[in-house]
Amino acid sequence: MRIISGTAAGYILKTPKGLDVRPTPDLHRQAIFNALGERVIDAEVLEIFAGVGSLSLECLSRGAKSATCIELAQKHGRLIQDNWKGARLNTSPLDLYVKDAFVGIRQLAERGRTFDLILADPPYGPKNVNRRSTSLAQKCLDDETLPSLLKPEGIFLLGHTKRDTLELTAPWTERKFMKHGDTCFRFLAHA
Image 1 (tube, rainbow, N blue to C red):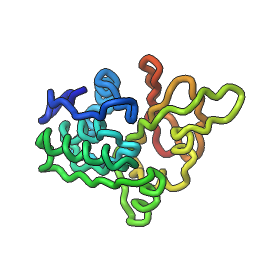
Image 2: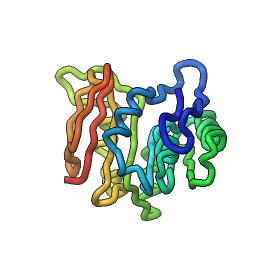
Image 3: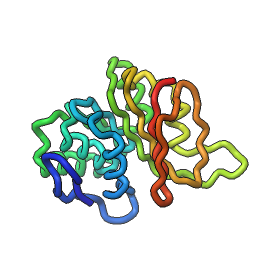
Image 4: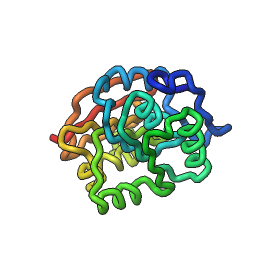
């Protein structure tokens, strides 16, 4: 797993052993960033369920102004910082919150923070046939605070497994949908 493009292109990201985290694979990130294009340049980025920070570090490498990561696990938080320094991206600001994603979202909203890009590729939820999803992806869509963190022209990128049928709730509207293998990515904006 590596940073694909920009000033840190080719840097191999440190990842934990085992199945504690599922970093967004290189091919998926390449497709995401091809779709985002110039939106990344000078963007203020928030990555929730950050894992090892692969999405936010890719943004910084491609010219984002700053990145904020929310990750629950301390060991993954240390990996985000190690990768940020190792990729020599530490000239660009990176804020790290080691806490529950929804607690972090509320705290950022209380501080009046807003972002051009919000990126979330949370742990996958179970298959939901004939019932409403209970996954973290659906909880992101249902969260009443998250929309206030997105600037008016911003994009919220949400990853989920194709077996998790999500219900798009107000105020979100879908701008683009991509599917790669078992993973879906939704590019959402304010309605």
